[in-house]
Image (cartoon, rainbow, N blue to C red; front, side, top):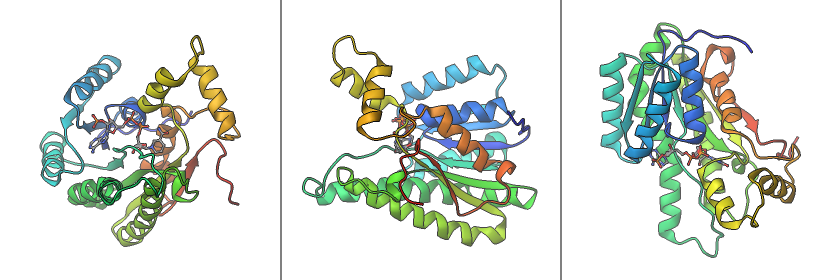
Length: 268
Ligand code: NDP
């Protein structure tokens, strides 16, 4: 594996208390960065903080409760990062969740909620951390990376609002990348398919046949969903792509995305 030393750099991961965000925080800490994570649930956040501290004793880690849809909380999170670490070099906009609903059963309120979550989970943190990212870019390197979904390019009718919002966010990221390029801030995203996470573990608990293992259940679903690599992705596989896009490993890449879908994308 390519080694990269992030000592002295600061990475912020929204939704860093679980799944992909937590795996990304681990990679940054392993590379020597200081890391700030946030999430809404304080117990989950405290558990994540404890597990990271156990793995990386002496890690420079800030964990703060923050809902990315609450502008004041996001600003307070950015201020806490500024006060603790004095800088932000890399921002990973990861917080969020999907919504399963067809056009027929998506209400106006549900549409608004979904558009709000997908757009403002990117807009608010990016705006709040921008002054620090600009400073970091001035003295070297700065990047924003967003967790997006393959639904942005390959919509699914059973996730109509999420698919539509994901496409809009892909466009937003492209515009941001062009606007921020002169300031030397790169902006990219990953497009993921299905990645093992809390929500899939809960579905397994509800839907699996008695005695059916997690591996068998996910392999069967992967077959049904025609995932060419035949399995769900793992959080660390999404995290590795985020890490690549957040660091100078991808220093000549902006306004782009990496597909982490196990081959589900059908377009050329
Ligand atoms: P997890 O549920 O394991 O992690 C989601 C994280 O985001 C948690 O830390 C959660 O903490 C946090 N979070 C959710 N909403 C907010 C919010 N409003 N403000 C702050 N933190 C929030 O899921 P994943 O790791 O799978 O999800 C990571 C991202 O990947 C999400 O944006 C998701 O939509 C996206 N994604 C995942 C897919 C998959 O198959 N797993 C597929 C496509 C996209 P808390 O709940 O305590 O706030």
